[in-house]
Length: 237
Image 1 (cartoon, rainbow, N blue to C red):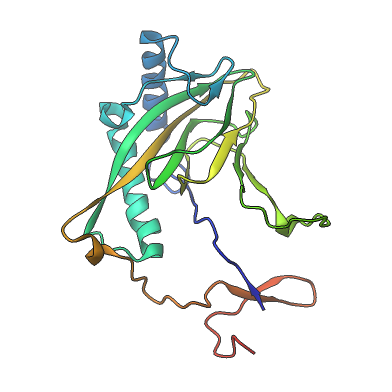
Image 2: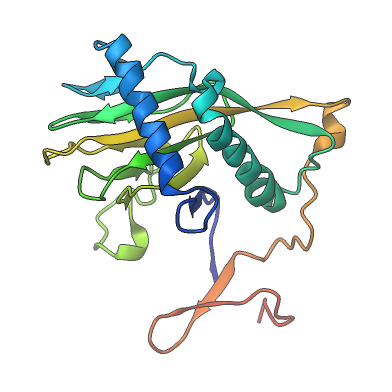
């Protein structure tokens, strides 16, 4: 039996492909970011390197971003809280802060965490997938000696950003953005999410429907393909 321990729970969704937004709204967001950069051409420097531009916090209060902020919150409430089992009547997911990013040629973001919040994420407003990948980095060592490489023992995860993609991840997950080696600009917004408790904090503790301590257990077939064991009754055999 193979058991997965301590997984990072990340959520990936393409809001453009599933019809939650359209091309006109994408253009509105891109134009708004161009206007923000025109007013503040220098921007700030946090994790962005070289020529990358980053706005100050405040996208969450910008009128053009109201719809995408609502969709981000809705995705958290549906996807993440369904997984964790938290009751949305007893806690509230709030947008802590959000900022805009434009990565042009050679721009990249150094490895970093998002301290002081629960979950973080990025939404790609304009990206073709070849302007540098988002990379999550596993900082917990899996082996402490020589170990032959296997794709099932990865220490990093790469994702090619494309327009409309939303990616949510625990704020403690180390991550970076690879250099943009094209002549195209990639537009995105990044954000942090916090939790506000509505009443007694302990009453909001997660109680996932259908949870079982063996739900992340697998075996393999003759081809090495993972077979999900749960909810089979012979899971320990």
